[in-house]
Amino acid sequence: MANLETSLKECLSSIDGATAVALVDYTSGMALGTLGGGKDFNLEVAAAGNTDVVRSKLRTMEHLGLKDEIEDILITLSSQYHMIRLLKGRGGNGLFLYLVLDAGRANLAMARHQLRRIENELEV
Image 1 (cartoon, one colour):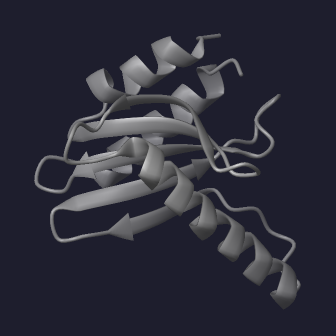
Image 2 (image 1 turned 120 degrees about the vertical axis):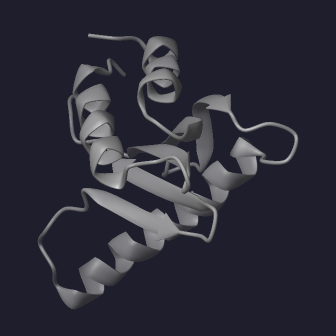
Image 3 (image 1 turned 90 degrees about the vertical axis):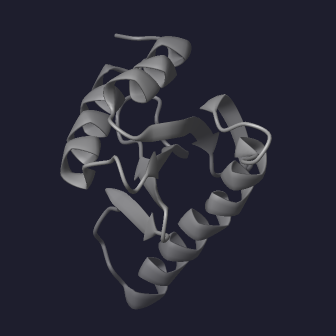
């Protein structure tokens, strides 16, 4: 099992095109850990905003009577991909990993696979 800091570092170092990553509590909107981003990309603001995305999707699924679980939410921009992965493991209830990828360098299938692997190793 990997701790949070190790897991966030692994996201940035092992996922091609990764530029920022955060572990977010979507019940509060707070980022529990962040890495990357920079002065032009505020991960705290992104964490809070993507909390609204997750809550909205969960609420919509409830209204539709869908009993399924969200694995990933993908938002594609012209130069970036934003991937949200809800944690399902022990202690992961109410949390998601948020990953920002450079669209020109990233492979979405590999990023998704590696993020799932990192999720499984993460100790929350």
